[in-house]
Image (cartoon, rainbow, N blue to C red; front, side, top):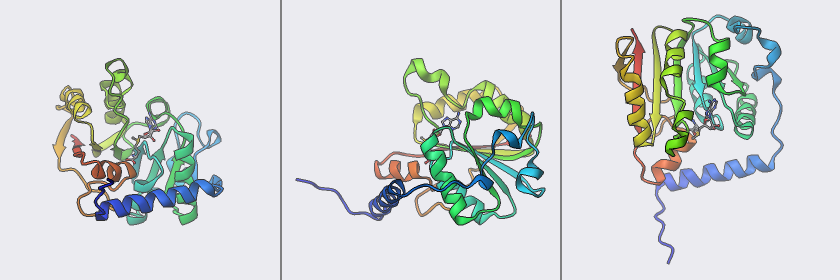
Length: 230
Ligand SMILES: C[S@@+](CC[C@H](N)C(=O)[O-])C[C@H]1O[C@@H](n2cnc3c(N)ncnc32)[C@H](O)[C@@H]1O
């Protein structure tokens, strides 16, 4: 017999699934003013040109369907937000949501952040990185694809301003331990701070992303890590 409990989280999850189904049946709109294109930058991005103003820059890596970047950029209009998403389907959904809300301080970029950041983000320009539920690549032979690794931490450190922050959440215990190990070689350059909850996080949530909501329903714990550049 089917014995699912109808909890508030289940209701939130299924209403999100329904919204997503409706989106899938609808034509996603193109919003060229909310995306970075190859023509927008040469070697390093001119952020004042991209956003039409000078403001602190936050970068989210792996924005998925854009739930975090939409809520966070609406809550903090004084900050410029760039979302980087590799998967075309999710990237387009995030652009669609930002465009329909006409969020002036958010942009999306479709690329592999690990390849793009070293080439296009200048030294000491980012105020905060947001990395929520990055792909865990659980098989040992795929571990090398994990976003959090010494080479990428080096890039986060180079591009962060002094006092800049990396805010990370994952449901994956093994990846979390891998992250702690990867950061252990950098603790002369970072200090641990309290994790900063997302503006859209509801009761019992740390960030308020689609994956977090799915994992809460599955009873999975969220591990968080936040570091400030010394
Ligand atoms: C598990 S999902 C989490 C999505 C969202 N942060 C959430 O919590 O709902 C991970 C996302 O990161 C994206 N991603 C993984 N590696 C990436 C990379 N190197 N650059 C940009 N996006 C990446 C994937 O395409 C996927 O959409």
